[in-house]
Length: 82
Image (cartoon, rainbow, N blue to C red):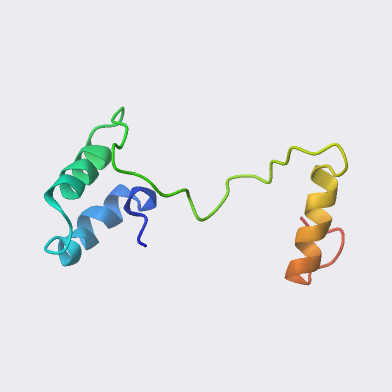
């Protein structure tokens, strides 16, 4: 479950060779295009990112402040830390 599209271009080029033999030709081509052509949109990326960019929530009960508090509880951090 490697998310190749989330790897930096530098790391992709440096570490891509070790996976080259087990990846399909279509995936290899798509990855190279993705990392070499800035406006290229991947065609084989079926996985969502593992790390969310923000804590967006669609709720009328809780808001962003609540999310921060819950996250701090889970991570066992101080209540006011971000």
